[in-house]
Length: 285
Image (cartoon, rainbow, N blue to C red):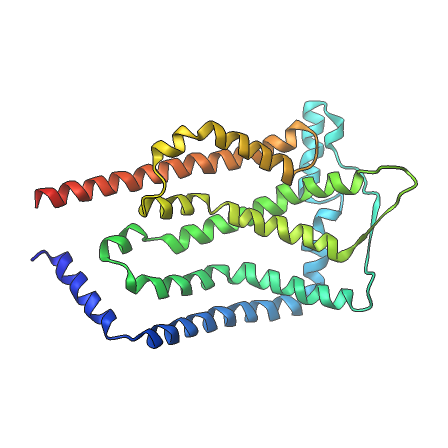
């Protein structure tokens, strides 16, 4: 009997020793540890919330933010003066008595969640891993690293690219000069957090392609066939998350998403080649 089959039988025998309640108990402890990590990072973020608010969360609302400085350099280079952000015509305000305190708690939680995400996902992986076959474990090797890396890159992309472009357009858009932009801090923070976390999740596209390809739902030929449709969807998404009407902003967002789609095709192709190789080896044996 092949060694892999013996190993699979041993794993299956070990799994049968655990009851459904045992699995629930194990899952509960993984969730507790993940939640504990989020709580620790949330507490640390709350301790330094003033610095986080001033230098991080309110960064895209200041004209000296890194992205706006680069946009001004690009404006000088391209001659397109509208790219340079020189001032913001809005004021942040807290309308409710407890809004600032509530926002400090909410912001601390999202900061804690962002930093604890790699460990939380690792805990999820530790729960799933024993149920996989050796070949499946080998195929998913490094998954925690790549998921965490893509999430971090997505967060940075959302924070430094998408959020500033969206805020620049939204706060400077006026129906009439008589209407002043007095923006609620809750609304502002919601935009920053939603765009940053949203991009972090969007950047998981290659991982989703890997999983769907493993279960046979997606193939590289399918992704190639609908590549043009995907490009249209990406342009629409870029237009939605960057409401700025200038072409530079939309291209800046669409290019990374297009690259992620092409990477997803490559990932799916690699999965299919691995499957074909395993099938050929099985037929020979």
